[in-house]
Length: 35
Image (cartoon, rainbow, N blue to C red):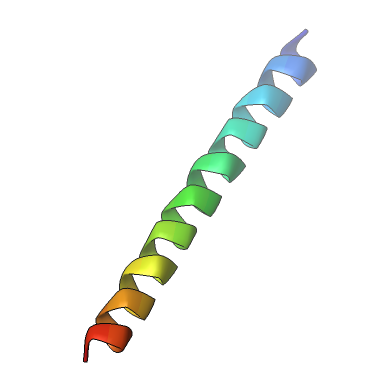
């Protein structure tokens, strides 16, 4: 049970980090395009 819970938390963290990186990438690309 603890393994599945930790795995779920890890996967949620990975998804959150991926979304943050994607948003940062889109933001930087938008700034570059607007320049």
